[in-house]
Length: 85
Image (cartoon, rainbow, N blue to C red; front, side):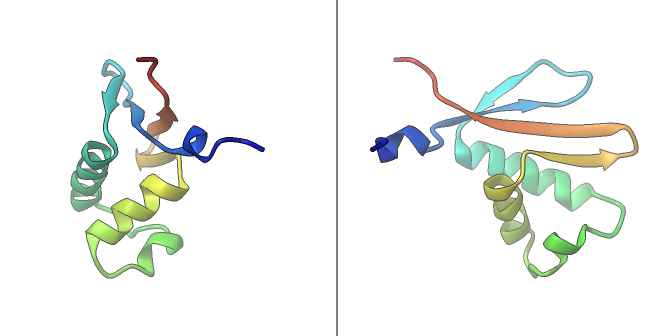
């Protein structure tokens, strides 16, 4: 049986076109996603519209997605990573 800690997200890597990859802790990624959503000019996708608060939208994105198109042709991607200690 697999160890449950194997699936915990200690860190994420965030890939933004035109920028260097950034390693973030879960709360830091949440803050970045929240900021991005607050500036998102278009209607949100249906799965995010069901959440009233931007905090909930960002958490749903972090926990269930791995990419979001912030503008045509510009997609943010994030992936859970494990850093060796």
